[in-house]
Image: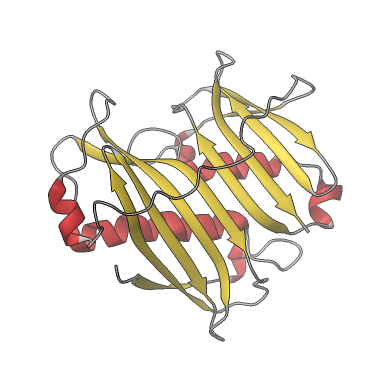
Length: 238
């Protein structure tokens, strides 16, 4: 069985929102960071012109995090096939409670052409992922549509762009959360987060966040300036 890779992350006061709950974007940043750290620790970096891009997140928030502490984040790849890979995650608090579990889906592509590349067989071996591993379940409930009703607009700026020269994956979640009414956020905490990335957004693009707000669920679509669907976000709340 593939062992987990672990890394300890420290929370600070600035990682908490006005309601003294850790920010969702902070936790997603930890998950994204440990994915890269694990890969670099084992492989030492991507092959020339190869890069991993995130396709999906499915995150479950199991218990609240309401105080400054250190968190142990764990990850391991669970599935490789053609150009697609899946990872599993756990976040454990100082008391040993699993507060977050997650699964992510990634694509292995050529950095310059953005075309899909076959995952090298050597990666199956170094990460101990069997070729006959069971494929994780498909992300559900993400085929929704949203009518264009008073969208929130943002401009992608320098602080949104990461080392891959496109909008960082976590920036989309921040835009989505910032588009929700304060009255809703004030009385709600996240239970589950699903994100589907379809198209990249680059610097100085004007994006629109379309939101369908329900009592315990939010569905959002992020479009670029050409009205193309780029990212979908679905959150369940409690």
